[in-house]
Amino acid sequence: MKPIVGVSGYVMTKVSNNLLNFDMNIVPKELTDALRNAGATPFVLPLSKAKEATEYVDQMDALVLAGGEDVDPLLFYEEPHLNVGEIEPDRDDFELALIEEAWKQKKPILGICRGLQLLNVASNGTLYQDLSIYENLEVNHIQKTPWKYATHSILIEENSWLGEALGTEQVVNSYHHQAIKEIGDAFRPVAWSKDGLIEAIESIDPKQKVMAVQWHPELLVKTVPEIKNVFTKFVDIIDVK
Image 1 (spheres, helix red, strand yellow):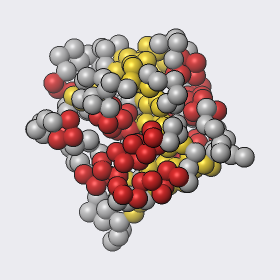
Image 2 (cartoon, rainbow, N blue to C red):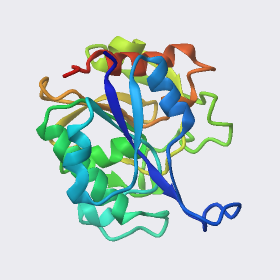
Image 3 (cartoon, helix red, strand yellow):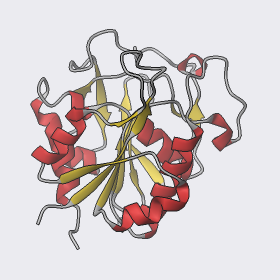
């Protein structure tokens, strides 16, 4: 039986998409395709109330947190930087509730880009609100090249889930202006860019199968074929009830 994977989506509004006159719950097709090709059955979670999180998590075998808006800095007790982008407090609330419930039920979680950042904040970590604050910045983390191409390299801890999936060095795409500053107490870093930013994390507790990357592997599977191992590794660790 294929594992059921809930993918937390986001809302594209009629303001952000002027071609339509209504709001949409969406996730990248490349993400659901990557999960299906890895052997899972994904379904998209509509943006909902935090109190409904348990009902959704009860119906899934694992959770994926997709990319999207900035994480609200008030969640890690900072005032917003001048360069903070759009935030969506309702999404933060819902996804934090999903994380809490999936963690409670010990169901695997995969975070992508914003998903990594929110997982870190959920575990009492903090973020660089904008990479202009990061003193050692040397790598372009907001690529102008299309996202389907890798533009910088990362170093990966050999003894980690990502090391098992990709080896100790890999090339990735990059489109983020926020990043982990202080690592959350439930996680350890397992990959870094050449300028020292954390590019992947995993849970310290082996009973919690939680992992996340700062880049977008779903958009690289056609140009960097081995990237699909991120999804096959994740799907392989899911216990189907």
